[in-house]
Amino acid sequence: MTGTRKSVAVLFLLPALVLLGALVLYPIGYSLFRSFFDDSGDFTGFGNYETMFTDDGIRTAIKNNAIWLVVAPTVATALGLIFAVLTERVRWGTAFKLVIFMPMAISMLAAGIIFRLVYESDPDRGVANAVAVSVHDTFAEASAFPQAHPAMNSPLKSAGGGAFVTKDPVRAGTPVALPLTGVPPGEMPGDAKSAAPAAADPAKVTGTAWQDFTRGKGRGKPNAPDAAEFGYAGITIEAVKNGDVVASTKASANGTFTLPKEADGALLRFPESNFREAYNGVEWLGPNLITPAIIGSYLWMWAGFAMVLIAAGLASVPRELLEAARVDGANEWQVFRRVTVPLLAPVLAVVLVTLMINVLKIFDLVYVIPPGSSKDEANVLAVQLYNSAFGDQDAGVASAIAVLLFLLVIPVMLFNIRRMRREGRR
Image (cartoon, rainbow, N blue to C red; front, side, top):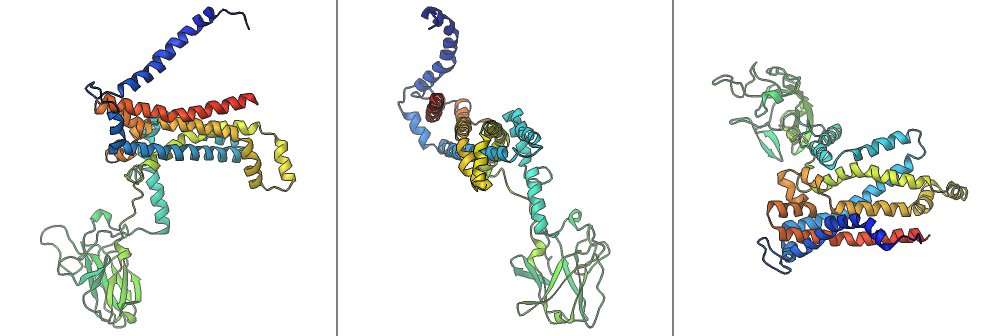
């Protein structure tokens, strides 16, 4: 049409064709060729492909890739849609979009290091567990004595389930000694004071609950409170008769407590709630949650990308159609579901397909975030390809994995090409 000779056109296209052949076509062809040879260069036919589907590590990688392919693009697209719609009407919507999109400026490697710290199991270091522990402790107070237990020759015995009970019934007017040990001095309650013997009261049951341990050989008297020992401030004591709790109280700062006369003749019990282990959060980087945890870090990065594209599509939606739906009596949910989403379908398809291609070759986050104990459970095909090629030095299996990744991408690419052609014909 322009009168340009084909030879001139080929001359101009030649550099691009050379680069395309050298950087795309040749690696694909050589990977396919190399996948039929083992690590020593001997021809094995489909042996590497058989290994790929029988090796437990590679099968785990394929399973995890399937999880990534289904969950990550779908959730990221849904979050992007929600953010785009909700921020459309607020005055600070632009600032919100900027904050959500900002993680895209961070490399995958840096994001992996950030979330390795976020998911740290120690609540003093990991943000995720700090939040989890704070929320948990708001509704369920942690025990101050998780390691406490009776010493030898103690008047207490195990009651099962982590509770401890006196061996003999108690009597009003006779102070009761309830010695425990096992709590490190640095972990005693901050308001604990030196243990003191309880005063006798003929109308009530009194006693002392304290840490029966004094540093230094030969110091302190067993089963008797000493000035160098601390009371179990706030520990719960129950009086039990025939299996029923007839009275309950908490020890004061010096460990002394008082129960009403109903406790006369009862057994005193430390309920298991006194010794409940402190909640330390969720094992985000453990084998069971490692893949969802990494997907969470991916969503933190890519939800902003989805939001920006969907917001751009939303800006081109005719407002008359939305107003017409509202005039016809549709509520906001119906307008969103029956008008907004169908009109945004082409944009949603672009975002979804782009993210699907992206997660098929996910590498950085999966390589950086998991600790050594969870790397096998978090494995994906791109990481397995790297490990097979440079760790196991098995170029044949690595090439077979590369071919599999290429075959997985082809259907997504064909779908994208067909969609673009349909859009072009409209």
